[in-house]
Picture 1: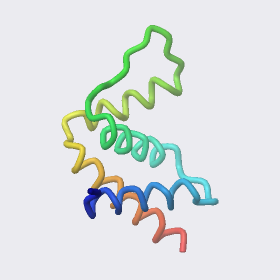
Picture 2: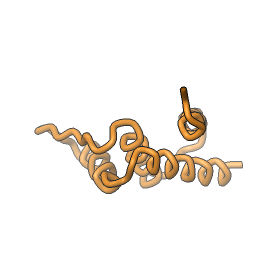
Picture 3: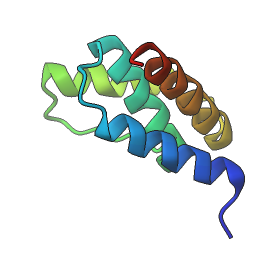
Picture 4: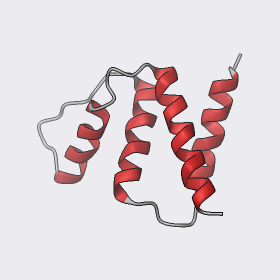
Length: 88
């Protein structure tokens, strides 16, 4: 059974995914990091070939690697609410 946190996380992800306005790159990296941590925990991928864009993404994820999946979902939801409230 899905928890209230899981439902709220999925709703926040859906709303951010459907947002038409551009989001600043640093905020997008935070979303990426929280999303990855929430869904994959600290299973960081390390591949030999990394471009600059992917390096920034992995770095953002590494910064939240000690966060629990629940904490990452909560932070994602907070950030989503902040972005969505600023775009009204």
